[in-house]
Length: 237
Image: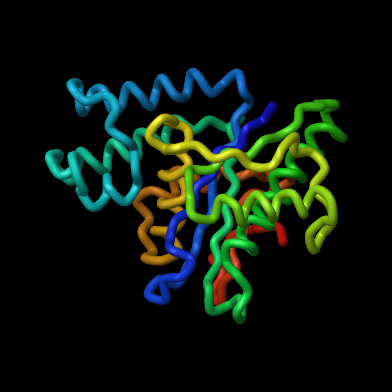
């Protein structure tokens, strides 16, 4: 099974922020333990007596909580090191939505529909071209959108979305507390890196993962940005 760990960045209802982002990493279930261990090592090196410290993008960058005890350079390097663990066989998926461009449509619904169908297409490609019959599952951080997103997902599987029905996901999304999942925390780092790039043109993190978004034939399928000024990337619609 392929598990897409996903998280949001940017509050959907905050008018002071232009973008809402939903992004994450798809991992084959046999790879999850290894990646979690490597993320643990980063935290254990920085906080040897508090290995439970959470990797949270905004906390690391802004020095919130215990992260304030570390120099800015150390925090940025830790963030970049975590993103550097992402390998080519771990495709990323991300959706960035500029609220003003949606003309009143719910950015959460739009972003979830896009990331859901793109992950579904990735699984379908694996089946039709490689004979890989693995299904997928999406795991989110605990959020106030939990009931809403589960309802959307159920509808995508039965009624369909604007582009068809979701056929390769084994269940509606599951929700975990990020404090107990390093991979949900990694999804947070990915989402925040994309958010910082779109909202603030911050290129300290996004270039490290840009080539990891699902792509084939020179076209990036895994990254979708809906904006008045879409970045000059070779993105699929």
